[in-house]
Length: 425
RNA sequence: GGAGAGGUGGCUGAGUGGCUGAAAGCGUCCGCCUGCUAAGCGGGAAUACGGUGACAAACUGUAUCGAGGGUUCGAAUCCCUCCCUCUCCGCCA
Image (cartoon, rainbow, N blue to C red; front, side, top):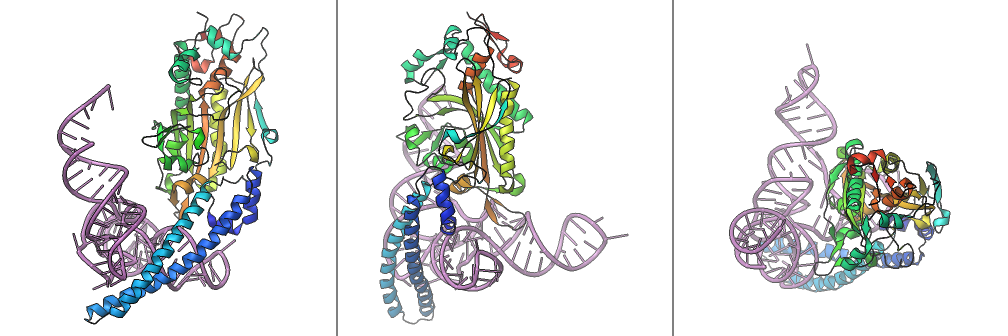
C-alpha cells in the first residue's frame, strides 16, 4: 500500500513509478479526485460533530443542574440526522478510496533498471560454467521417466495436470532437498524454522499483496473463503499482522517449508511439460522483518543465503536484477536466481528475493516502536525463495547425468538422500 | 457442532449512559538523588486522519475500548449481527 498522503504530495513521482511498473497512471487521478472530495466532506461532518459534542456536554451540565435542555436536545436531534447522512456518504467514499489503493502496486526503488519486461533485466552475476556433456544429454523429462522418479499421469488422475506425484526415489530426493535447505538456513544462516498453515484468510492474502489483484491465480475454498497459499511468505508475514515488534528484536528471520499452490491462469501452452510449471510445488522460503534503515543490506543477505543453496549443490546459476516492468506487484526491488539446465540449454528461475519495503507492513499493520523517539513506524519485509524444488531437481538431474543414464548427486546432498547416485532400475 | 465466559492502551486490569482517551499497577522515557548498581522521588508519553503552520515545534478538530449496525442530545457502558479467544461437552487424524 502506498500511503495516500505520499501520493498526494508526490503525484508525479508516483505516476512515473506506476508507469515504470507497467501500469497506466489513470487510477491515480481517480484516487486523487476521490480523496479531495472525501476530505471536503470529512471536514464538514467533523465540524458538525464538534458542535454536537459541545452541545451534548452542555446538556449534561444543564440536566445535572436540574435545568431544562429541551431546546438543545431538539436542535441536536436535527444535527444528528444530518451527521448520519453525511457519515454514510463519507464511508462510501472512504471505501472506494481504500479499494483503489489496494490495487496500486508498490513503486520501484530508484536503483531498479527501468524497462517494460524481461529484456530490460540485468544479469548481475553468473556463478559456475554451464555444464557441457560429452554425450547426448537427456532432458529432465526423460530422466524422470527413465529413473522412475515422478508419475505425472497418476497426478493427473488425482488432481489434473500440474500436480506431479513423486514416487520412490523421487519422493526421497524431494525430501532430501527440502531437509538440506532447511538445515542450511536454520543451522548456518540463523533462521527460525516455521511450519505454517497452508491456507490463509482473504485479509492475510491481502496483506502480502496477492489480493485483490491476483485472485484468479489463487485456489480458494469457497465455504470458508480461505486461500491456498502460493508461497509461505503469506502465512509467515501474517504471523505479525497488527503486531508491534520491539525494535531490539529486529531483524526477525524465518524459514519455512511449504507446499505452494498456484492456478497459473493464462499460462497454458508454455512450459507445461514436466516440472517446469506446476499447480502445486514445494518451496523453502526465507522471510525477514527488518528495520527500514537496513532493508537493502538485508536484501543482499537474503540473496546470499539463497545463493548459498545453489553453491553448495555445485550448480551453475546467474543472478538477475529485475527491471521495473518485471517486478511483482508488491516488490520495490527483486533479484531472481536462475539455474542452468544443460539439456534444455536454458536458465530456470528458482528464487526471487525481494524487498517490499513497507508495502506489506502497511497493509498488515506490522510496526515497531523506535527506541529513540518512541514513535511507531512500519517495518520492512524481505523475502526470498531458498529455493523452490521442482526446477532445482530439473537442474540437478540434467547437470548430474552420466553417459549411462544415472545421475550423480552433489556431495552436500548425499547425507540427506543416502546414496551418491540415482541409477536406472 | 452444543453450553457458558470473555475480548479495554506496550502488558495486567478498573470502569453499566455525560466530569473517561480511559483509574491503578507493570513496563517505558526524561529529570532529581545515592561516589557504581539496585532502590527512592518528581514528571512525560496512545494511535490514525484532517485543519492552522515550513511535509518543524506547537496548537486544534474528529475518530478509535474486537468488527459492523442500532437506540440516544450524548455510548467503552444499552440493543442487534458477525468475528475471535478461553472453559466444558460432543465429534475426529
